[in-house]
Length: 283
Image 1 (cartoon, rainbow, N blue to C red):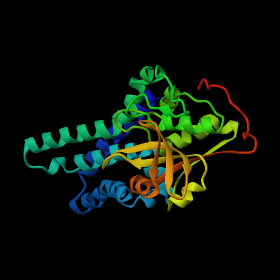
Image 2 (image 1 turned 90 degrees about the vertical axis):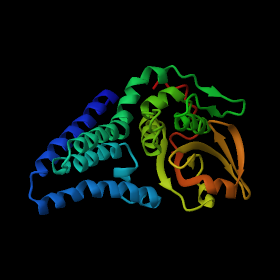
Image 3 (image 1 turned 45 degrees about the horizontal axis):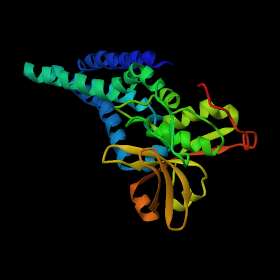
Image 4 (image 1 turned 60 degrees about the vertical axis):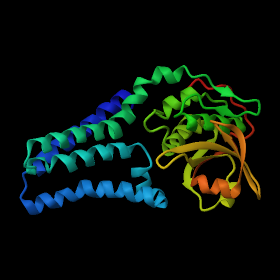
């Protein structure tokens, strides 16, 4: 599904949420309160996963909250949660303020993550893949650290890739950056027939990361932002990174552990793809 069609789909979900909420708002008070638990439950789930990150990898929850589907769920939860009480607000200005707030939240958290990749597609296609002398791909924008780190990791497996094309497929954008779960799925889809196997998983320790091979680790970059780096080596004292913003750097294991979200995309080649060099991809 292309980004324009995805944008239409999330707008349709929001519209359905509004229509459903208006219908449910006509229910009697006990039932009205019961249906209000649905949007509250969705929002509570999102917040709980943010606080207890290990829950994001628990079966069906991973499918719901780590990928782009969560933006669709936000559209549904916000429209249901804010339209249902509108008719119960006594003042007109309260209803107007609630409606404006709803539109702003849905636009920012649900529509823009789908719309922006369509709008900036040509800009991403024009990005030049920049490699340092030691083979680290430097990110061309503030929001393409994931694709740039992937270029570095893929190169270590003998696969040549392009930052801009990976960013297009991964739906990178200035609002949400690049979701690691979606990037993992994109890499698997693009290079799976070449022997690449990707999985997005949680790690308990840096020691586990040392045994994983080529990985794209997710680091904290502020309270609400993440940063993606390629792991080059893990020793007893240091972790060597290919940072798309800084180049090749080394951090102490404790310093790295303090920044790491204990999440990473693991890349590996099957026997069919091992030892094979793949030319520059025209994705």
